[in-house]
Length: 259
Image 1: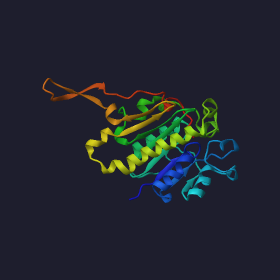
Image 2: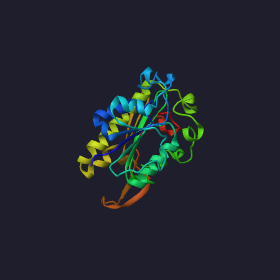
Image 3: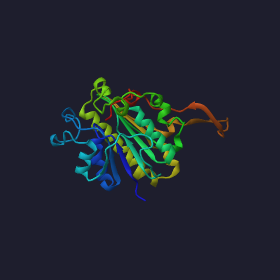
Image 4: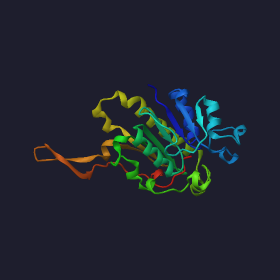
């Protein structure tokens, strides 16, 4: 069965990601979800044309790339999903990220998320098996559980709301976030199913880029350390975590402006 791919948010990141995924998979698999309307001030960083001003971003992109579209704000319970589906979250608020994670927990589908600021971008992957572990975004970004700022359903704003004013973006950061998402998607959707189980811990679950450095966060770097005795035998695990990554001002640590 082919996967359904839902791109949630069609602004700064989503508009750059849609054409890549339409080539990487097939347009028939993709549904673009966004209720935001294109404004002239979006054109300096989002992949639209002046003739699209005033149109739904999801519908405008869908017309170009022959995808499906849904003119709605994403929220928990909006639709039903299958285990094969992907939720790719390109919005600028934690409430939508939390809803996507909870839908993954409910249906067993998988999710990816993007975040970026003026000069930094990141993407990260989540699947239900990681719930409540150190690989759960709700654990390493706890604000996802409580931060409701920037929610267009309650504040009446879209991707150009308060978060955008506080964290102005460059088109290069939007495109970079989309590229990181595309890389993770290709890795987990196309490559990971073909590799041996012992290789999975060496795969990245999170990619972070800033002005000077590109980070790769591997699964094995966030797993409990195995405790051994003098002979090297496994005696169980400890609460100590092996984490060889070096944080580089992660874009997702705040209410980032991805959309």
